[in-house]
Length: 257
Image 1 (tube, one colour):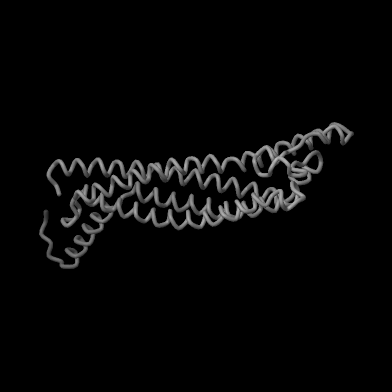
Image 2 (cartoon, one colour):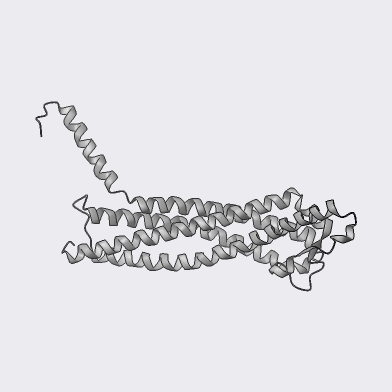
């Protein structure tokens, strides 16, 4: 538009144009989904791992006297902690793959660089990511619902303790609220023949006042939130990959290979 005689200004304008092209090639939905996925998995894996350890301590201390009563739960916690390690590694690698696919699709769609074009292999890869992400989102929806179970149990336990404290202030007799209990067997944490399997009255209220209970409750809430954030990230991935695949198909029909 105007004559430029200063070489440094030409170089600056060239650098600026390159930066604009690079920024335009960034797949922002995939980038946001990747950040959400990593944050959600960090919360779910880190807090979930510690919460399972604290759960075993609470059950062993307050709800079961015999080791055989909670040996199944202890084995489940041990194996699920190993599953958490695998989930963290898998989602870390899968997030990188989806982000790389987003960069490829964005560059192909916008044709920012001449060497990037929509190919049959690229469209097939995008379709594969859509199917895998859809399956993962369906599975993770079940994980999200499963994570709500300990949160529900601890929330009900806290509300029960609150009711016991109110009754203790209004009624002088201890027997008036000794029948109020929380049974871990009803939530599948212990077998039905476990003894005592439940905690009642002021004993239950004293458990709710311990730091172990509040710490475990907070950890499960954080793990539940992390599972929800990861599920949201999978939905964003699904929307982004579906959009990229649709546009790549459109470019393919236009003859861009």
